Length: 195
Image (cartoon, rainbow, N blue to C red):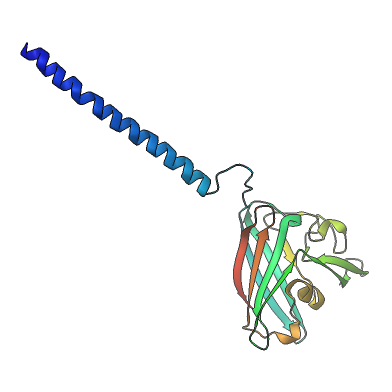
């Protein structure tokens, strides 16, 4: 009889433990679902491509500057989906932001010496095409690791940044951000010092 009483006591203790464990499991599952939706795991969310990009601004003379971007590693970037955000302070100290998805500029010389137009920043990969060819115009190509984009001349620099090279000095800082328009996420964000 004593053995039966011990078994009953043990059986009584098992039921509340199982109930508590089931409640914990259900709580953890609900928390994971809520966290997933709050963290952006719901469907129809595009993920931003990732890329390592080097950027420089070189003032080549008093009235010329060139913006150069090199894709060093990561995902290929469709330039059709990239938007530039350029932030700086104007001569009065007011913050300014320029947005562009490329701009058509003339005054470039192709490999044959012809004067051509290009959408800047254009791709400088001769395997893809020469400056002025539609295949190297911003918005028309996949930007792969190892490839370089440039504004090419003062007009191209102004078209992308909104700044006249005459009004910038070596040492000035310009904030450059590239945003993937599909996901609305930043791919590149850096304060660049004019060299």
